[in-house]
Length: 141
Image (cartoon, rainbow, N blue to C red; front, side):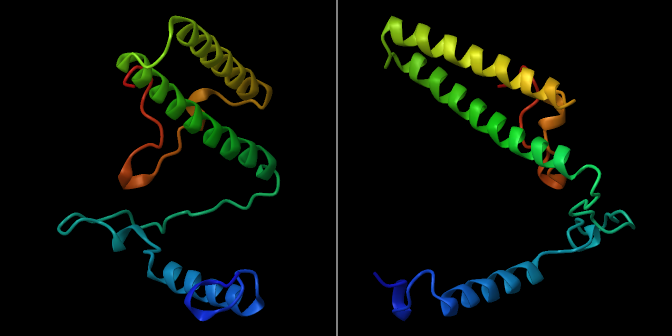
């Protein structure tokens, strides 16, 4: 199997160097400070954007927070898909009951995992800057 037009294998050192090079070029295009993305006529904050925190004391908690955020995002997407299927009448009554129970158990388990790691469900809602928050506010789904 070859890696596209170049005939190189996807895992070859040449291909990996090419991908790393492309990623480097792409990241150089990203704005590093808010002034680079502030709308015309509106000044942005004078502080550079803090992209990553490398505090060794909180790295484990931050990693747990990130993983739980991704799991919560997927849980909410699955819940929306399930509600859509229920609204469409795609499921039998038994399937609806089983799906509802499973989603409730998953939500409860997420709350437990957050509590185990000293987080709240609100802590999982990452601020994406000008895009808003990752997850919708509670009650707006």
